[in-house]
Image (cartoon, rainbow, N blue to C red):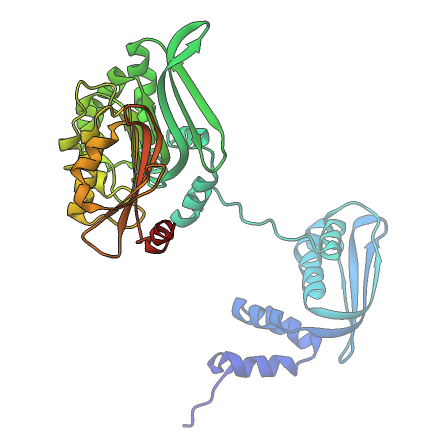
Length: 418
């Protein structure tokens, strides 16, 4: 016996072709047979010459008349609210959704379900969009939102949940500067001040305190957090040795604390703190080191120069040197490691120039009338240019600037011409 396919055996593609050739009345009958057929029928549109929707005798129920371009007209009338809700309203929705209507005649005055549905269809009210909350967002999108927050908002937000704290702390924050300095004032009394400014908002935050207990309770946790997540253009601390030592002790106890991402380090601290910063600053970031010798009986230049982060820094600036030894040892280190072009040393009160000339007599290529010097390096493609400032009667300098430069033989030969 040959196989006789029925409607359910046909693929959807064939069913669509069949439905497209049906008249409107047949489509209505087919869509009432099953949900799958209703879905197929609802995809097809039908050309309708006229659709009339009217109330019944002033009640919020009514009738609908449909005249398709092909086939017989259809009339549906409701006698009560129940049939209006279960028959009339769904039929109106179907007609308005799938019909290409040539003329629409509506006569509805009473408020009711029919009128409400017709208004929705006529105005094409959009579906209410899905409302997303924070937990629905991807981690990548959350990170973008966090990066738009100001620093205070971040601090508040990271307190909402453990996951949010981890996410907030994973996003680095750029700071223009962080300063911890003494000699500030609070109600006419001297105090210590912590101030910082974020790059994103340029908003400055200032905290003033007098007692060590205030620092430990309020300032220390904030400062530790800033150093942990910050990329800091300048970190400056002067005359706050006690507080810096407390800070170092706190950070040392923390497991896995990252290297400090500081670009310019300007600090006057204890000897212990000086070397701690040199060990714990990230060499990839640190470009400029500024310090002073006034806090020490003898500036520990020998140990200072054992740190690669010091002699590889783009610029080293030392105030109140008072000893030519500092200048001599830095330049000897440059010669030893063949310092890069652009490496710079700025020394304030570096001592007597005669002592320096005596030490590097064999390397002096030229000395200008005003005292500037050019020293030869082991690499013939480099020289050390020393610009002196304000030689006194005893040949002592106010300051000098040393920089590794390309050889300036044309400039030097220009002087020898006269």
